Image (cartoon, rainbow, N blue to C red; front, top):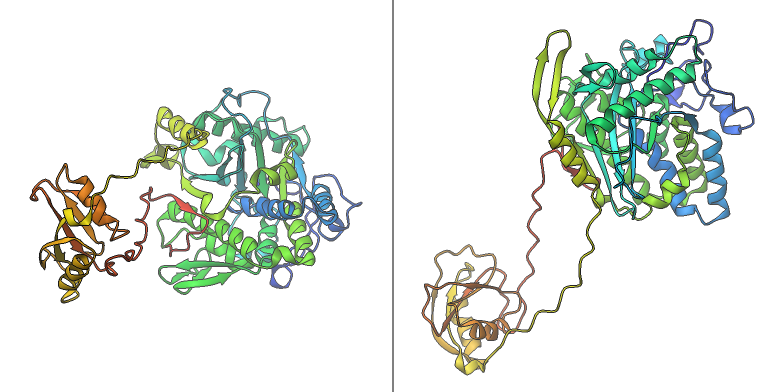
Length: 519
């Protein structure tokens, strides 16, 4: 996914886009070394420069990773690993300086996933079919930082808006999506194309390092047409739109509301749409949702149980990827093998507001350096080992005959207080009276008592398992109050379990198993 230099006339492939956008047919014009010894490469040569993946970088990584994780201990898994290594492209993306480890990194991994806005590989016919528009040069369109802790227990994906206003080392303040172009152009044009692309990747890595305070360990970019193959290999991806979309005049997106499966050209239109939604913010969410959908599909479907699909998946992932020289795909697989969908989180870097700067245009002002560094330090912090909790002492109880109980009906079921009162008397409790609660909308049964009557309340709670016990010093000492909720099932019977309250998270945070609708 690095931006790429336009291919000189005579070197571009001018291949028509195949039926259903099958990218396995060859592309000429590659500045990278030939892979004529690889059958996969003979079927699908790669171009040298940065690609136009949208945020789908991770989907390529994840495809190879998941296959490797499940098959790493088998001969077939070894073969797929060799196939991936033979097909993947390498670039010298990690700089020797300006990306130093502060010593706190340990075995955790930070990977930079990048998508370029270059369309130099595509013919006019392909541009029209994909609604890809005009080539915007070397600017990076998508930047995501992925953090995986040493134990592989989770994965965090943080998206950076492409118009983030940042300090680019050696070039001053500018939009984040121009960092790659600055680095590329800083390498003498007499140098090989691979060196210029590496210069772009290295400056982008240094820029993200300065923003986050984290050492960037690895780098990945993705091929545009590989996007189509992967989405087709996994059988398309289900997304859920809150409202119908008609953006045919711009991205070409045209979708009904509700859950639907998209692949190929529709997938690109889905993640590229910017008009009719909240600009790059909603676009980032779409990219994250699409990645999550690919992961769900690979994990929950039969893709990884079909050897033919496995090979297709590995070929699509590895041939679409360009990674740094040091990335070991199998090590990455081992590090991620225990990550579950609800432990994969997507969010956007903390920002302040949109702004406009003379000579630069519309930008997004991020939080200041201290706030960003604190955010990423917390993101990458290893969890402290928890000391084993000591079992609490069981509460003291008394004989039921010493417990006076007032029963109030808050369930909405007529006569329930009288019925429960009778059951308590049968169990040996003293019934102080029955009546109606202040509301008939109690969903949970509650036992209330004054300070000092804990033993009385604990004795009653033993007969109503699941009831919530509360202190209420407005009550009369010596009498415990039982408020029946709609979860009450009778004395001596556990109440109906209540769902856990929803976790409160920031509006930009989603997990890979979140399938709620989006704009």
